Image (cartoon, rainbow, N blue to C red):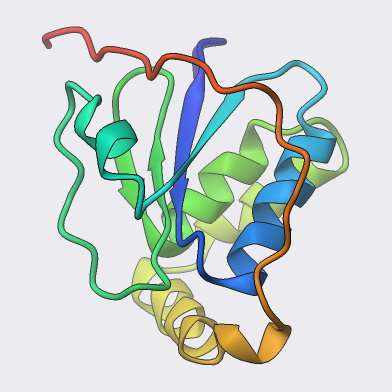
Length: 135
């Protein structure tokens, strides 16, 4: 995985999502991530890589440093892999079959509003979204 910027697109109306993004921002000492609420149409439209149609409002998208696009549990675990120790150990979850991981992710996503209202989190200043290089 390269050292470029990764972009996490998240549900800004979801308390669990905004808390998760705040967690990543706090532990992103090398500033490898940019964050975009999925309801910010202008920011999402700025991507040269089209984002996939998401299965539901609780879904997260990771646009990796190399331009790869990942959703749901894969996005969460690949984002964890880019964090420093010990959080990068969570990426071991990628060894679990995706169908199982995504089923668990979907259960949490269905109940995400039970985690409270969205919080204002002090995110790093926004960056221009990276442009994917043609493959």
